Length: 78
Image (tube, rainbow, N blue to C red; front, side):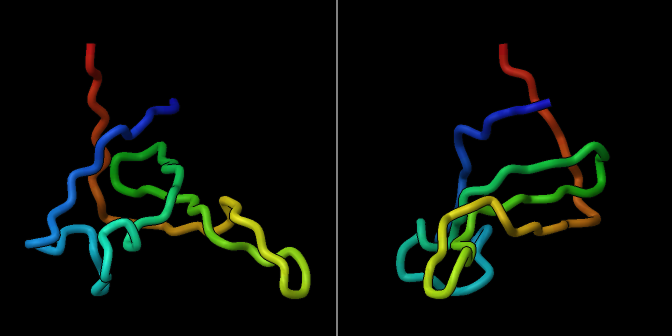
């Protein structure tokens, strides 16, 4: 199942979703696809600069970030 995330709420005041200090909120995020087929884990496939040759890199979905002990929930909007 594919699903879009059209809105992500973050809180600068409560530092939600931020693991380190950033000057600008958008600098804390990377584009990613989420993949899961279980309610208690998720894998993010992250778009990061990926080296392809000496001194050359491209943005590509090449980094996997695995998160366990989470709770996945899907909502349907009609």
